[in-house]
Image 1 (tube, rainbow, N blue to C red):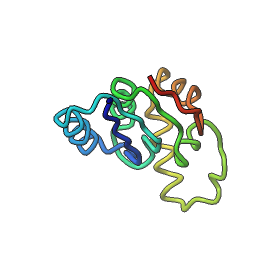
Image 2: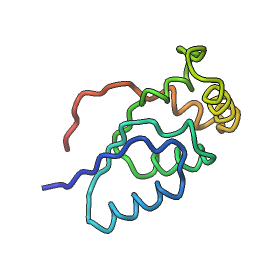
Image 3: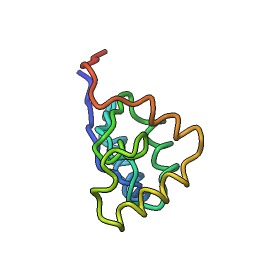
Image 4: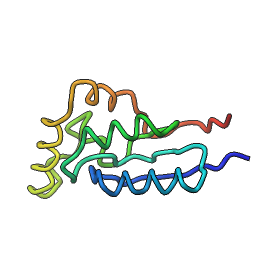
Length: 112
């Protein structure tokens, strides 16, 4: 039987993401699903996206990830959050920006 790990709410925290992925590997877990919220708050958006792309077989958009594909409800956020999101948007590589547009908010189960 395959072991599956589910991760979420990374929010650009590179060091924590590396530690979690190492722990998953050390536990012999076969597959990782990411439930989103990859970036938005931390200072390493591209590095976190790259780690998720390399390690997760299923990735969906989280609620904060939607701010990177649209202006959805941005005006309702506190100013400090708007600034963080704006900084993250400007920091994304073109490749990672495009990647966000490929993610869905939900997926049908896929078990292999």
